[in-house]
Length: 428
Image (cartoon, rainbow, N blue to C red; front, side):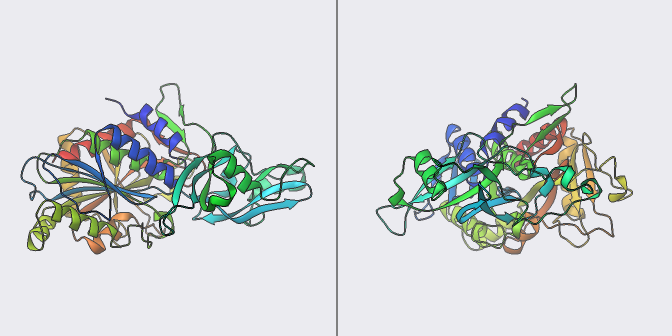
């Protein structure tokens, strides 16, 4: 089975962390998984498939095997649902010299210039009054057409632009919605739009979580379709991989689990992020649901393993000196195993050996990603999860170019290898 076309459909639907979770939920529902609620008691069955959405931007799904549930513990793949970009502020309408603009806030570090002159829309959810004041209704929203754009300044007014440009996110990156006309309702524009698109009354709308996204479809690149250019690859590729791999995987013992967190791009130290007690509490509840508590759970940890899945920087052929001189991952070279002496990646010699054995048993290509010693590297989910769940783990990633750009580039074969890896990993 090939997965690339299905993933390209997924990425068009996963336009914000909220839509990423909802799209994953639809996949799990179709596969027969049962939704659990955090407020309920969990009673789990052998060969059962379940998921829980503790917060709108985080989803955890798992399968209980039909064999010895306690051995070999948990097989966990972690990913993140968020993407660098922009979020809509409260009271966002701004008018400047006859144009209506939307006031936005920077989320992490996107490449500013890559957002210029592109069709942009908004997605997320609208918070609406409910019967219980502490349980408002969340109405998903994804505007299905280009709503705005961030126009670049013509080169005639900035003759030095090709020598390098700097951008102020509060001034240069605000999108315009159009010229203001007499019939144009610039006051309360967004509220009127939300009312129209959701069917909710103005009086019932309390607030919103809305994100800008590039409204462009993924596309193959090259005559042989060897590469794919797409928005939000970091890290929707791993979200799709973790969820679809779990659906198609068949654990014979233990518990297979996919955990897709929010807020990795801003440090993960949130209630819905990896740098929290959330996953450890969910795992404790899973263990309780199958009758494994206390010492039995800790024994399960001893035989558990985690794949921390995120993007990996491929060598850029125009700037090869940015890569380590002896570890140069390229598009088409296979899934990257990420290593750091600072343990910003959770990989060590033991876990690297384990994942290499899985690669080789499944005849998959792999390569190493190690940062240059004079270039700082980022942190990943594995390091954070290991603070709360002390299990062996390894960081792996889909090699890509233009990470954090509005469109990123990856290899078709590498993606298929990643999917084979995840599916196989859940079965060990």
